[in-house]
Image 1 (tube, rainbow, N blue to C red):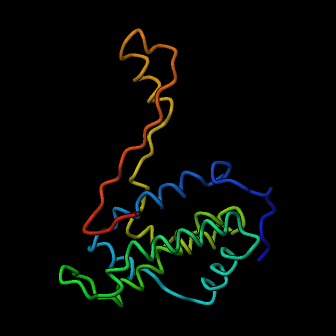
Image 2 (tube, rainbow, N blue to C red):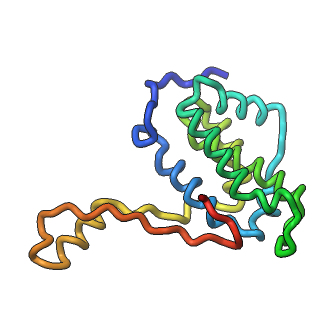
Length: 177
């Protein structure tokens, strides 16, 4: 299968698939214990998926080092689930391990979309989209923040809004730090 030709993407802000990437990454802190078995059940491994995964993680893929860094963050985020040693865990470590494969496929696919075919991208995203059919976590836009700040008082009109990022709510004991 031929890869699409693209210009080199050197920064996340320049990525043509930025909304999907941010949607997947923002959802990670909201993955619940109930979602893990659903992700695991939806994940499959085939020769086609393995080849798509290899293409998504190839050195020619955009921002592949950031993808690998995100994989490390996911591993740390779900470390308790994978160890299975904590009393509060409700998901078997084997199930969590398979669910993380679905999560890693979604991260890889969202970053590599410019070099994947539509079929490859859809196949790698399939398990993720079973559980999260749309990106539920929305990032605030500058336009909406600007509109609010310009209407708060006359002194604020014409000034750009201060950059603020809402803190995501985390489920169970997961922390992105």
